[in-house]
Length: 596
Image (cartoon, rainbow, N blue to C red; front, side):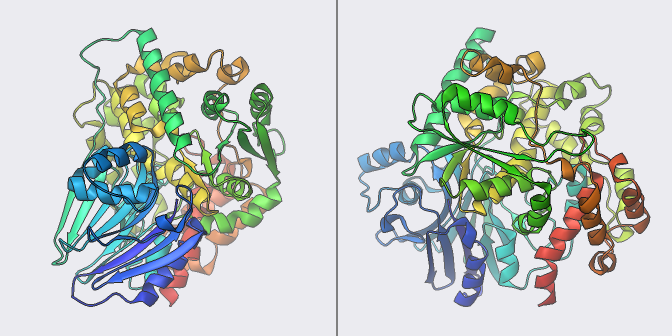
């Protein structure tokens, strides 16, 4: 629901509004309904609005509360805003709008930085507190909404994507070697606060930051996930019942916080089909959307899951929109998708979400999506394999998940970017945190709170918001995640994973959808690299820009180009695509900036 940007000066000068305008242009696609800016001495904001709650001008942003001397720019949705509004009214607050943005302002005034503890939702916002001369930033528990920043001794700049910060000028665009190691080890995941560029960082999920005019900064982690068993043991039946209640409540929250129709992205898998089943009786004319791609010749991989999504549509009589995208269109539109990635993302379904979102945005402004269910309820094949692997917690994880080991990273990357095995150190520290009973508890918590943020969650936000479409993820309702985290892992992994969701779905959606093998959002042409796609990647990796950048060792590139389908990661991603994607993202998003 929007794009935000801003600047706070620490040297007493006034931000250049032309720079705010340039930043705002780079977030324009996130909010096509309204544009505005605000300045107050050393602070300036820009905002692009996607109108979803309170469609009137009363909820336009930047929103200024003159009485409280607070100004906000906000991206996201607070699902319990009506309950909070009633509570705040009982405390004596009066409201001039009907939306959730003003509720955040009043909540901040009432409870200070602890206001975030009370929010159910996805959010990234900045509040200028004129009384205190401070800027307060906050991001939701799972980082569903992005918040990037650049900070030097003179100023702080913030934005919803890296492109806006790059457009502001003066950004250090050199590659961060530590982030590079994470990127090529964890399927392009670079955990906060780092990004691939040294000059840009991101606010970690479940954190807030406060900046004072003298340049001092404070940061607070306001939420952590407990992955231990409750004192009172629950039976399997009790766990399933609790999951059903909390999930149904989460789905209803996500549906009701909208003044426009809400659709569902229907992949044909269990998760999105279950969302349809839970909403079908509550929504007249439920809108569903599916996308598929061409198969790869020789039966290497099927490019759609219409066989299953069609069954769900028929069962619930939804108003369905089905799109089949030819491979020629995928290749043609790939540069657009990459240019709209706030950070480089290698998952092959990024372009799928981009092309699907373009179609869906013609019909609705809000959709529900099934992201998060696999991480929260143990749906991936590698979880039980990890658990059975011999060795330390790090070995169990590394041997089944890392895209490439440290030795291969050193073979691939030019020596000037070599670092120690930073990813292993980071993962080991994350797995060894307190409040997790077993190895699988550690892994699922790490996945839910760190890996998911910079992989499926980020790509869904980026690719939908590129078309002014808001995607909501009910499986990442924090009450649901908290419940699942305390559930015994063996219950989640039963019957191939996601057993609690399968139990809830039984009798609600077709058994064929529940009992099918785990599916993925397939774009086969980016996994089995052939023909025009191979030529596309070869052109990128042999370009003058790539060679002059000197990021990759040429022997490694030539090895992959010679036999691309031979070199896949442990979870079956194309290593050639990984190299081409990062280089092309840098060419599209960083090189033009550096050349200015």
